[in-house]
Image (tube, rainbow, N blue to C red; front, side):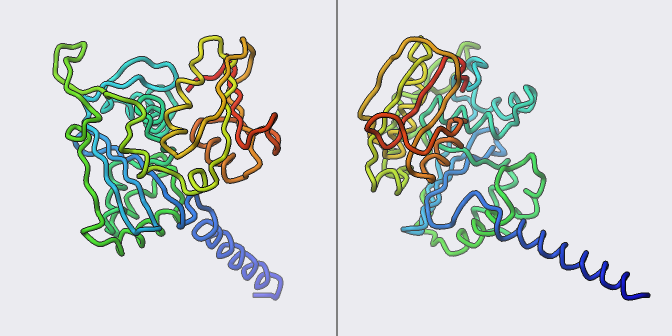
Length: 291
């Protein structure tokens, strides 16, 4: 084997480990220090939303039954929550993506990360969950995120694993569904009990002045954005309806972290660094906004 071949093999070997190291340790959604809410498609057809809180080392696990009536994101109508994942796959949007968007829009639960039922084991500190979620379509968390979540789950004490069935919390009430069966619907959005659990430290501590400029012509931008922003701890100081104009959702902010958060949460495009007018965060929503 000549020197050139040896050098090429060495280069390939080094490149492989550099790429693998980047994928494992540097590509991440969660920084490990701030709260993270993950939506899980449950084995029984329901949905679990788990909030990771590193500051107090706590996991808050909300359960929502499959027969909860929700207005599905992307203007796809009213469905039972248990059907949303498969509906997203059928529509080519992705099951997890449509589920998180629907939770945000219909129930005021701010989340944009997801996993199918197999990934729930990660939260429980089970290594098997790590291998079950390697399929790209099952989760939008990177491998580094899954490792960090697994390690976090291992150190959470049983007393700090809070289980909340939202059918017993006052958030959901029993109703008769259109097909004649019994199910549930939300009583109030946003739900007051969510405020402390989902509040984002950056948003809550810096108390930014938030404005919504709605140019949808119907006010739907305000209706969709407001509940999730408030649950995150945001204070909306200005809401205006400014006629009708083309375009979707654009978020303006001086904070890179805020732009990243709201862009991921509401599928907004990023505006210029400095927001217009005298605000810290501004949402401009046009008639093309579909969420």
